[in-house]
Image 1: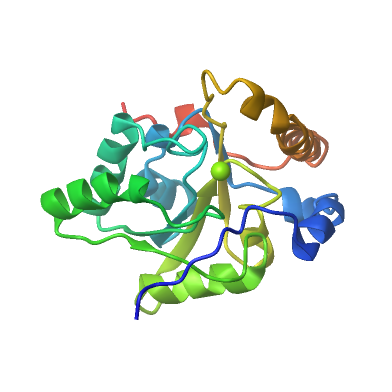
Image 2: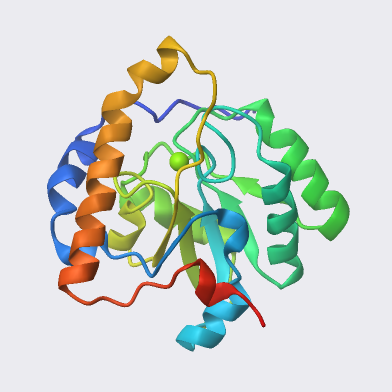
Length: 218
Ligand SMILES: [Mg+2]
């Protein structure tokens, strides 16, 4: 049977509730906030936190690619490096399944032998059920942990509620969107608002949040 997929980009009740939930400190705490995906070093993260992260649920749009565009080469290389460190990755995007993942999956398969699965759950982010399906697809061993990496607390940050630590990446800028870009202003505004709320709680709660420099190796 052909794989059925639906777009999960629209407004859902769960997304609406997430607006309120994000004001609770535990729901807006990212373990790391970085300028770009390629700066994340999971081996280093495990050393720093005494953790055993072996699986990553990865967002696409504005996390590893500009909005609705192809994955940046730099991020393809970073994904390959992660997999070479023994990390498993699945992609969980609220966007419809698209051909734009094909080159990424092919390049990764060719250089590592690992095949990245695309999660096409009917439960859009931030619904915890979509994250649970993603965890199952990673097929990790006992004692191995999962991380979510994305750019948006409203959607990707739902992982926290599913008990999955979250790393927030600064959204990648999309050039030349014209009127389409304008239509996305409200969404971007909300994303920035919640990012600000999280930053404020970091400050007030003196929460530990790793930054790009923490991943740098001497
Ligand atoms: Mg995104």
